[in-house]
Image 1 (cartoon, rainbow, N blue to C red):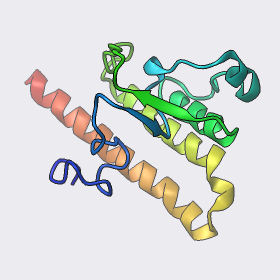
Image 2 (cartoon, rainbow, N blue to C red):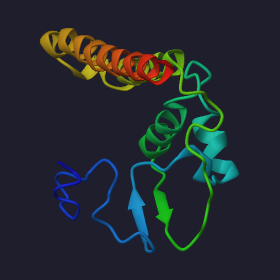
Image 3 (cartoon, one colour):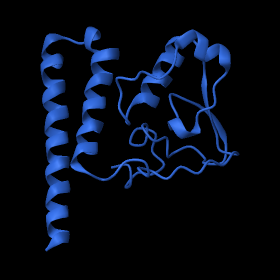
Image 4 (cartoon, rainbow, N blue to C red):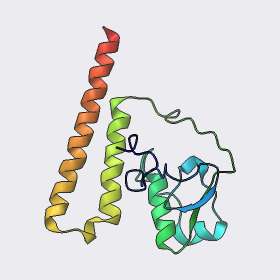
Amino acid sequence: MSRLFANNRRFNAYNLDYLPEDAVHPVDSVVGAYMQLRRETVAQVGLLDERFFMYGEDLDWAKRIKDAGWEIWYNGQSEVTHVKRASSSQSSKTRIDFYEAMWLFYVKHYRDQTSWLVDQLIPLGVAARGGVDVALHLWRFCRQRT
């Protein structure tokens, strides 16, 4: 949907594609490779959570930073080169790590705020989405090898 409605706030809330790329905006998070923090911020919220392996640590940090009352800003006037997934292979294991991080983020930040029913549905949703993603990855991998 975000591709069909590129400038729509509702369909592009996660990636903020409706905002001008070259401007400065307050945001909920930025890619970890883009982060610059004040020493006081790190002293207050702590370092990255080592339980997150490769994925989600930047989102967790950003949430803790905002929860501590700090602001996060995107500066489109600066330039950062980040090669997505350059440090991780496109293996099924890294895909599983991504969905495990998604689950950990939910447990750490939202589980205590949800109803019993939602708490039962979230792991099913994460597992279903992760299972489909890993299955499609394996299918594509097998097709490329034949």
